Image 1 (tube, rainbow, N blue to C red):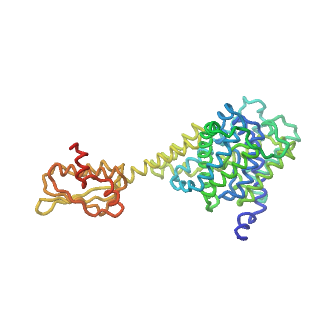
Image 2: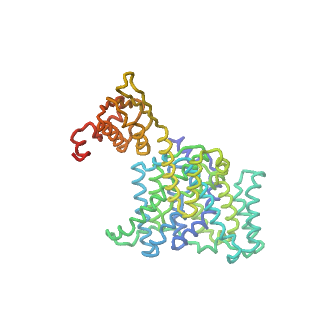
Image 3: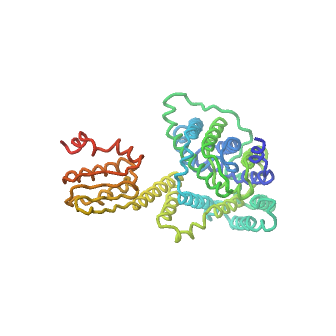
Length: 496
């Protein structure tokens, strides 16, 4: 027990604290921006990020992963806030947490094993592109306050990020970038956008708030659809991020515990006046790249975030957005799987198509759930198509020419059922047909219906049919749903 706590919390204290500081600095403008997207006060996003990060550090299933207010979740809240107000958003956040806890107990996290590697790669690449695109408004020359100083500061920031590690790796280079560029901007009194320009920072600690909404079925009918959407998108992004951080750190995580942890964190956020959130791949990658590995890094990020916005707000407001843009560009470059581009020629076309489709859908819709859903669906169709082609039927005529044995090899299911039927010659004049299924497996009702069709067609031609070799699993589904061995069912099927 003590060793487990030490490994989860105190095995990398220095790296975790410094990484948490970097993440906290990068969280501030994002939390404000996501609040603006959702149509709420900036402190709603900041309080949410603090609450979620602190709580998930204790109850989450993936050490070192950062959870806070996110853009994907904020986009889903826009209509609810616009039509019903903040209080209904807080109520929806509480219900989202409850649904996520239920999802954890019914082991919904285990469904991640059905997400193929090509979908995960597409998700990562799309997110990297979206992170980069989110920085473009800060570099748009038509935007108020964007001068050549912004480009110079951003370039200098990228230079520090990539060159400083050659001097020492004791201090995370993103942290050095933020400190140095802030000092330069203040000393030279540069007229560029800062964190303070994004919105007013709160000056008080969050307090307990119960949503001021009537506890009626009408309220439930309003918030339930939003809560379901928030639950699904939040868990999807969190579980995908956990998988990516698993790969980056070469460790494993408890996906079902992560579902429950996200739920508890969102309930805490809703009770503290915050909006729903989930894992953030960008901040999680910053954390890992800056040396964060344990739960202490996540806790540090949340604590530093609150301390800085409440007690050091005047200083934090001076941080130039160019410094944070440089950090996020580094994240997008580090997040993108460049190897996937080289693998386009090496990997099968179907695998590459799944990856590219996932990227295109996510980038086009700015909705991670849509992209992953389409990617998983396409990957499943490709898999079914491949398995369907691993089935074949051979036949052998008996020496006396009176019977033929058909030997079926492979998987018979909805995708291969038609070809299974086409493999038999129903016009051949013969007394008996033996269908050998020793090396075949029947998976679904469609495959059983195909077997019925084959048997009944032979019988219609006056041919005796014998089925041999069904394995136990196939025999169970055939005995239950087949009609060729049930005279009454056959009569009904053939219309008497």
